[in-house]
Length: 480
Image (cartoon, rainbow, N blue to C red; front, side, top):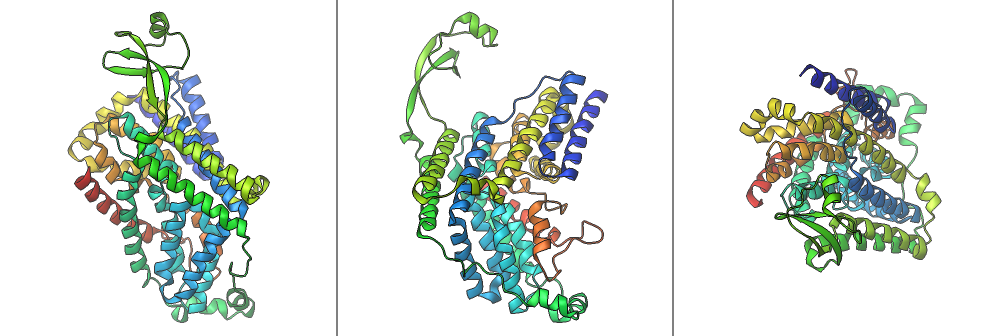
């Protein structure tokens, strides 16, 4: 047990140091922890989550090409027109805008362009910018578990199927989307009354008493409406949305997916997939750890949904390049692609480290947590939330902890019900979207407090996750 505790501390220390350094360090330092466990402690290396990583690469590439095409600017313009048309409702409409943009694009980092506009609309209306900005940042991240092309949702569907809980991506979204949207709206309603009005806030009044600060805060208008959108940019949006729609349709109607012939070894009632076209002998199966109890047969196998998603998204990216003139070099330079690639490295390192540790110590984990989750299955939500605070990635939380949760015999519907708890990294205000929101609010009302935890995102985040989880848990229990 002492060795297990030491190795757990190595894992936690790697996650802590990675979060402190940020960006690519999260995955790289997790890799250092993996090296210590494998080479110094002799643990068998786990399996990196390559399927999930490939989906993220495909989604980020597609979203990055969309941004390079100018299509994302058009989507931001549509959102801005709505916000400026109803400025009194900015605290409600701002989080709704970032929420649905994330669902469509699959990444919350799309909010960077919209956040300065939210601040501008609030200031022009005399509304404290902290009110819409903080909850809009939270909404952009919570929406990840509602996007049909996000790594978290695809990973949940794929890993659940491997553990006997067969649920499609549309079925997941049908539960998480209304739940999380209601959670965000409750947080937005609370935010409408948070903090002092600008004309009653002594700190703000003192700031604008300086003419230079007043000019900085009120002397400019940030807008995307004056940017001319090329017709091809609009075509790119159509291609992107069509790709998402096709993925959703095929997830519902998987019986129409293409099938191909594959060699399988029948092991009693269980079929084990093997490379197509290779001669399979009992000796080869035995060396691979497969005990042959049947015969080797050829079987028609339907293409897996995670492969379908990759093919469609990469194809959509290619069409945007060929038809719409999107420049790949611009995509690589933009924030959506860069943030997505950082997420790939983080998931690669963190999930591999976690898989290595949990695979080696699953018996100890069951002994420590088995009784608690057996009696109170909802407590897995705490495990998701705490792990998310440490690693800043919903996809990594799902990939790392979902197999462990199934090994603890937690039902699939319970895990679906607590899926919003995979977003807990608002708790420590060190995530790029939160830091960017603080910097983009030129009024200074959105801030990180003196005691770190008393920051602008804490209460909207807690309200959103708590309400979303309660509703999601209830709906999952009813339908699944």
